[in-house]
Length: 324
Image 1 (cartoon, rainbow, N blue to C red):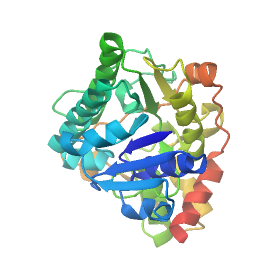
Image 2: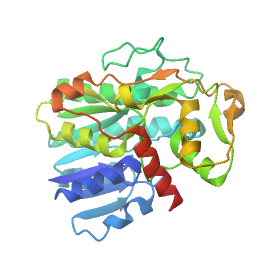
Image 3: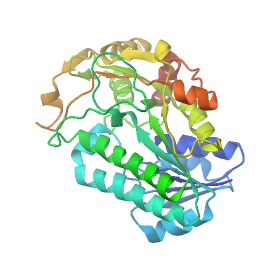
């Protein structure tokens, strides 16, 4: 197949490009390099089936011939990372909403299959410790808190995708990622695992925001790719939303314990320090989620998805990457 990956020089996009090339697809990557990195795709440049174009999904003239060339689009381009979104709220809204709208408009002209990347942030807050289901009600904080820009923009993306499917029969598949981690993920935009690993290896304090009791489920990039490609290939996934994450039975952990685990695996002398939110972020810009763990029933039933890689194994791979 001829596959276009928007945001393809980013963490997930570059790994996806590598996997698709290995199975024989032609891959064209578009990235504006706002959070992506050319180094992520440099090893792919020698492959004759790989192309890279620097540009933005906000430019229809750039995007149009790429969409026409492709058989399928993995739309991953987005403003990502809590820190980045808080620092660039307007750009984040424009990129995430208008960028998706342009991709879907162009894809609809020839009914190109689109896999739309969303986020577990869409679900917002959750009381108690129930896993997030794709059809759960959404509970968000006030619009005055900048953090909710990302969740809101991704919810609009999902609704655009569903509207194009229901009204125009554009085959759109929506995937909600739950804390995907692995080598090549940057520590610069607020992602906790690469930030903790970098701090531990440098001997800096490992800074945990809040009380560290927030619970997450971290997904290895290789497991995430298995689910992502299976959903992209399956004939009956368009018009649906799927959670994509790790197995809560093996990979759920609180953030403070994660910091200590990384400290142990790196054999670091770094102290683990709790940092109040008001010291880490501008006043009125941030609220946290106490519990964010996926219900994987739907994706298991549809494509037989079963994540296999343990959190310890993933963390060791990330540590080796940063050490190198």
